Image (cartoon, rainbow, N blue to C red; front, side):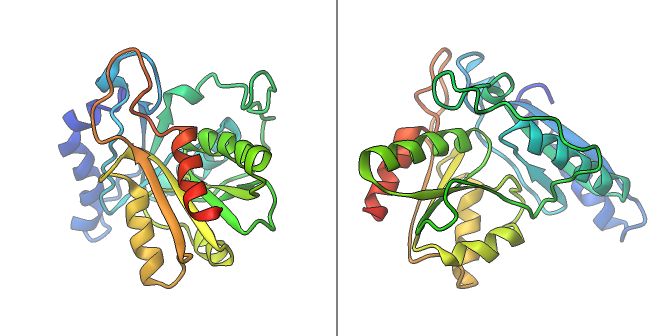
Length: 250
């Protein structure tokens, strides 16, 4: 699917791909991987390229990776699931396609090739920063970049240590996230989707009902509006994350 907005046009087929295996009681496997491009932060194309909404019906495994290394490992896992009849969708963040630097010209977002046998399952997460921090930021896709930039500011300007957790699987709360989240005093969820439509809202509800959500938490998301051509004003930003962190971490 070339642009995120076009998912609206293919909604019927998209939902049918999820339903077919269930309606046939497993007799009609529908293994496939959908690649959704043109998602999230970008200064071109306006709403059609950067339509920050995702439909995640039961039966489709949706992932949004933040770097090429995890993308390659995760795609191998998704292919295995598709060969067994599963349906998956990778969401490609436009801004990440050629991103090389995290802070100015540091080359920090260039990763080596992975072993062909290495996989990253749907329930895996990845940590950045100190593992003994009291607070964490959970993000995916391009929000992971903003979270890591916020992490640097929080440490240097406010002496607040945070662990950034990359949680690319969006169809349900990854089991790895459930395991580690209760160890933190506070958490900020950074979602790139629009307010009211963000996958992390469902995560928070599930985590809270299972007693795994830290008592102090916030969720930031993109503005509930449409992105105009040529700017990035409506996207989840580093400053959004910093403000939320200072609200509960200080």
